Image (tube, rainbow, N blue to C red):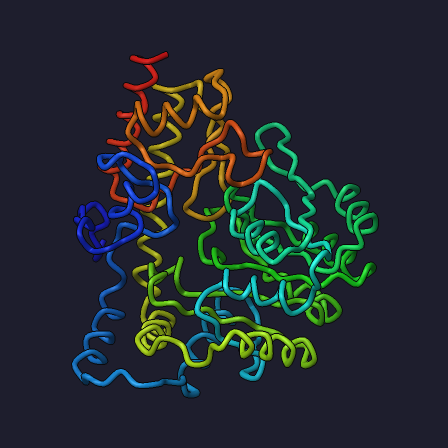
Length: 392
């Protein structure tokens, strides 16, 4: 491999949320963090080289991307997802969560119902409830270690609650589902039937495990595309979250104008100038790095699965189809959600994401980020094993 993903990079003292804010977030100073969804790997060297060039220029004024930016992003989505994009569909925001919030504010009114599928990435519920909308959850069903959609419940809740907007997570964080075309079609058909607008968060699209392929929701049909806002970003794929760039695609002109107005109403215009540089460079030059990274993540997943089966059979790994965030069923430990969090944080000295923050159906679970050197993952597992053996 050209890239050394086993190399441990010291991130302490860099003001990173993952390593430097344990105390501020109510954790012990010495916890090992595997929670927030950024990676412990430096991004691809060609991206860094392009950023160095931009920094050397020394001027960081207001910036907008030219045609080459669109060409880089659109070529990526055409090659990997068979999606033909048009430049005028693009609305840039400083992040996908920002785009979710703008969509909630723009296309619903206070008191309106917005649907999600819990357990799901917790900002989904935050942008609904913080904007005084009604949260409706079509809870995913865990069937024989595999999460499925209850389509009867999905449609029933749309009708009963007069749902106007659906925030869709695809691939799904944290349960790791890569939705099949059949599942996407059924979702789309129901949303078309009941005039529900869909915001499809596809930020993890580039992370699928062997045997699975991500399908862009908006490619299912013209009718579905006409009511879909697709949120993408280089942040998860190339570890660029702090660069604050999201590319959102809206083919429906009316929806796009309203969404642009919603962004403008927040007072936001140009994106981070270095973020634009990094995004274009990533889609132009990051392919080799990503290919090697994905192979390393496959090996990390295999290590984690084998470790749990051998050393901690009480914890069941939900086999992921995508993302680098792994959903662990810890109910076999026989602990309450509070006791489980105490075990993880105070006994094992780990900072994971507690399942309860993803919705009530997440209680008894923990989310762990495996995008780290193998030694870090192994250390975390040893700490957890020792805590369980010594404290339970």
